[in-house]
Image 1: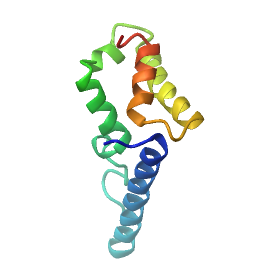
Image 2 (image 1 turned 30 degrees about the horizontal axis):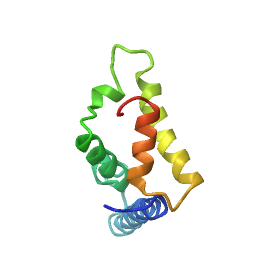
Image 3 (image 1 turned 30 degrees about the vertical axis):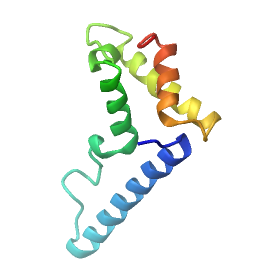
Length: 111
């Protein structure tokens, strides 16, 4: 998973397009979409897979990103994703893991 940001984005987009194409083909064959309305499961998206692996490798728990008792829980999780996305948008050749590391450091999730 040594993707740079641009490669991770392309892999993410390729998977979404392939899934969409498969759903259109299914609709043409069967006349209906899947029960899940053609939405990908989160755990197969390259960005999510890499982020979960990064979290595991750095002992970051879901609770660190989203504490139900905290009003800023959603903001913290959104800030992390937005931070990674912003770093990647500004520097597509940056390693995706490095973008995650920089965002997590900025949010005090890791040292």
